[in-house]
Amino acid sequence: MAYQAAMHQPLDALRLHAAIDALAERDPALAAALARVGHPAPRQRPPGFATLLRIVVAQQLSTKAAAAIWGRLETALGGEPTVEAFCRLEDDALRAIGFSLRKVGYGRALAQAIAEGRLRIDELHGLDEEEIVARITALPGFGRWSAEIYCLFALGRIDCLPADDLALQVATMRLRGLPARPAGKALRALAEPWRPWRGAAAIFLWHYYGAATLDEVRPGDAATRP
Image (cartoon, rainbow, N blue to C red; front, top):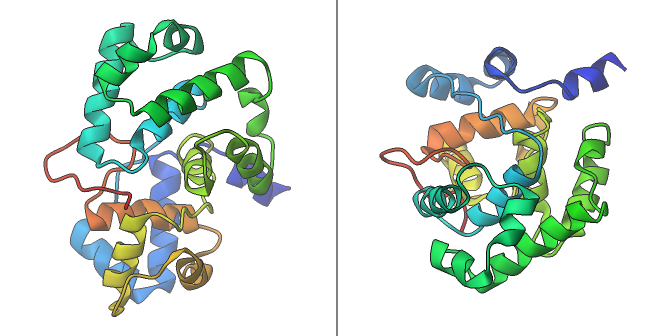
């Protein structure tokens, strides 16, 4: 029970740094990388519609492009998107902001699922990771990567590893000196020694790679998706 409670705490700077330090004690390559690049900042996001929608926006885009679209959306809505405000925007307005036709549909389906109670955001926090993944991936446009990103950033699941992320695969290749980047299944196998802090390892690896998944755009940001 104590372990489960710890897994459900916010992934703030103190908790993240402690987990990365623990990883460095058992992983010499990660320790060497940590000495070079330092600790990453925490990447907490509030649970809810806006974060799930932001994950949709980030799919298959560079951090810079996703941040630009998100900024235009917030400008159009006068602040952070809510279900009601998003639904008031016409499709043409969303397309002008930068949403693809598919992402317009994904956003509409997400908003409708929440409005109709088919996706209860408030219930996700108390569920195990696989059940959260199952509920989120039942929505159009949400695959395992999207659900795991939400688990890690919004729910603080410190052992959640979005192994299909391109930047994580490339960073692991560099960290381990591999001849090619490991695909999702291979990365999950390589990450087994990082339990129960695989999510903290992922945040460090994004930092090591120079990517900024769901962060505001900064100089030098790189794409985090293929």
